[in-house]
Length: 219
Image 1 (tube, rainbow, N blue to C red):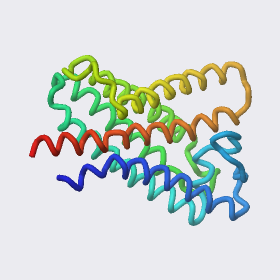
Image 2 (tube, rainbow, N blue to C red; image 1 turned 120 degrees about the horizontal axis):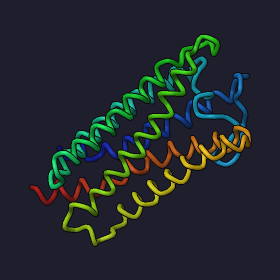
Image 3 (cartoon, rainbow, N blue to C red; image 1 turned 30 degrees about the horizontal axis):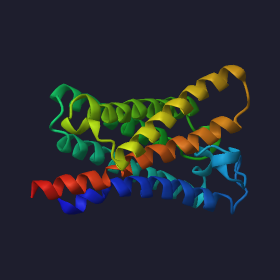
Image 4 (tube, rainbow, N blue to C red; image 1 turned 135 degrees about the horizontal axis):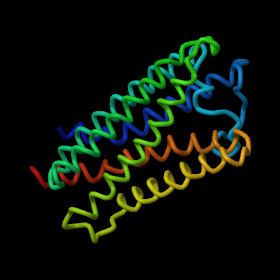
């Protein structure tokens, strides 16, 4: 059981490692829509563009699907560590988190080259709802610390990290919908996508210390 407390860190490192490594590989080749930049600030491409062709495609699809499997395990473990919550609430946030992870698997699995053969409507649908549903699930998970728990008045460092991650996700997701109406181009939306993926991973990783503490207390 002790080794399972490393899963929060694996969720962050595997997902972000996959994204960054596939991007670093893709810029070595003349791939469509791939440019050399700081995508978090310049938004020169979205995450998907760096994970379609060749070696980077295998790295991206394999790594992200594996990361999603760890996301699902995270939610199942988080459910067991959250037994102090009402059953309906615990099951709701867990089900939403797992559903979001499954949607990302679907979004990733369809990225088989060439670009013209990729069902982009399905990919965009799955990816969009992954971000939306995961945001809601993580927001519910954070809310559970305050609505139903005795220690809700104590704002620990992990809870501060969770607050920042959820708040920033909410602001960025709202910004995407506003920017679509303003037709400001793709670069801001691309940069937001990179940040959203990072914030989701950081939220998962923030449970590492909490789970270790709970396991130590239970022994």
